[in-house]
Amino acid sequence: MEIPGFGEISERLRRSTVQIRNSRQARGIGSGVIFSAGGSILTNAHVATGDHARVELWDGRELPARVTSRDPRRDLAFLQVSAPDLPVATFGDSSRLRVGELVIAIGNPLGFAGALTTGVVHAVGPLPGLGRRKWVQANVRLAPGNSGGPLADAEGQVVGINTMIAGGLALAVPSNTVAEFHQKGPRTARLGVVLRPVPVRFEGQDRLGLMLLEVLPNSPAAACSLLPGDILMGSESRWFAGPEDLADWLDEAGAAIRLMFLRGDRTRLRETTAALARAAEAA
Image 1 (cartoon, rainbow, N blue to C red):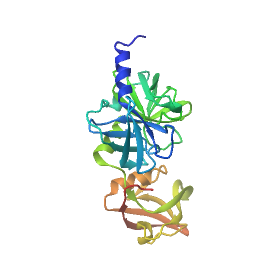
Image 2 (cartoon, rainbow, N blue to C red):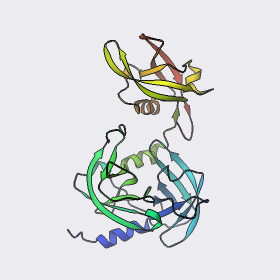
Image 3 (cartoon, helix red, strand yellow):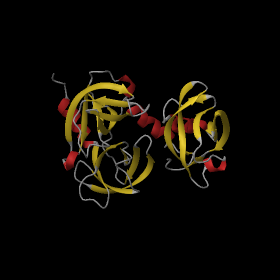
Image 4 (tube, helix red, strand yellow):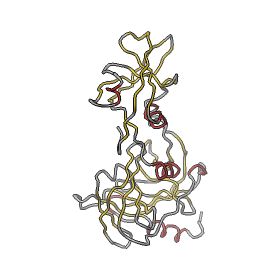
């Protein structure tokens, strides 16, 4: 099916897509999208792994960039370059995507600048085995170097940031998640623990517990007397349904969170309140 203006749409997307490499690598390591005319670049957090990077624009200019915000949980990051009047990508509403809708991916796979591929949307939502995070799932062909590049609809509006391949489908962070990141910043709440999900039989029901393998010194978990071997069960009378619940609830909690946990005797549910730390990057 011929799409009116497809060539012009594709060219605009190419001009708004950049190649990102860190200063120690000669070849491209990922892609990015021009978010503002003043030099803000959006990419994946796993592409922008350091504090600085090099950004190559569509016209061949290469500019130094610094990472201004990074959120490993959402796998998003913003970089800043010093360049005026850059060609900005237009972002759309990912909640309006429908199954079967055409999408376009632009990126720099294996160092090939501005490569384009098309496909259709299979789903928008969580993927089994990857928690409750929503993904735009499409059958577009991605390769190393596409990460951080735009996934756009047939009108050229960016509806996702290409991130990885899973189950034969390309997964992109939805544009509405990007908007949340831009407006609210990184998810920064930190408890200071290393966890492992474990099944727990409690009061005759099968529950999900999060066993503390390690409690970091001087962390909120240590301050509220949590210990290795304790099993977190939930918060404020809410039971964990998945391992990602804890991170989500930490971000919702504000200054403190009340946690339910088991210690030794698995028939007695205990409670404690943790005053949360917040940092630029949370684990």
